Length: 133
Image (tube, rainbow, N blue to C red; front, side, top):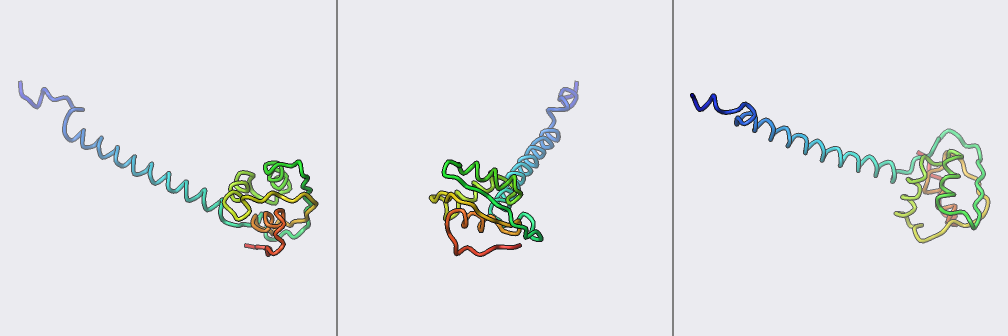
């Protein structure tokens, strides 16, 4: 018998080269997906988009001293002022308002305001200008 006949197809050098190449391609795709996901998440979290730039109708939000950051974010999301509660909370954590709490009171916002303006107003920073994109 010939040596070539004894070799199994899956043990051949060309087959092993094919598998090594496919594994490397999959690793490259996985790395690309991780970086793309991180970029997409960061872009969505740290951009300052308004919920709806064209709507300037006043929406009232009431903040009490017993409300948690999560409760306030949920109220903002329900009234369609922000896109997501986690985005708002992450953005607050990485902003200059990280160590500041929301001041109880009644606030009026529009959907044309960005998260920075809303967060600044809730934290008592009245110098924040309305950001429209």
